[in-house]
Image (cartoon, rainbow, N blue to C red):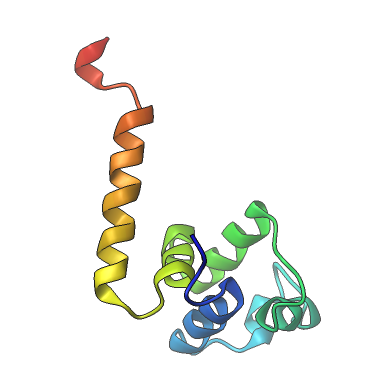
Length: 97
């Protein structure tokens, strides 16, 4: 499943939509590192992704959904339905205990 957009584009889109400069991330990342992420030169760890999302006040799944679906609302719904289905398959139900 290839991302329609990339993580780098999604990160930049959300950052700009929130009106944040790259300097706004100085508590969790250098401007140089964030620039490298947005230019798709580096890939963040899951922990770093969570820290960046905290600054932007979005859930990491929001960022990943945008990376995979872009601005295609139908694709977003399909992805979320698939995630829900997969979670149900791997998560024990409360009444099954």
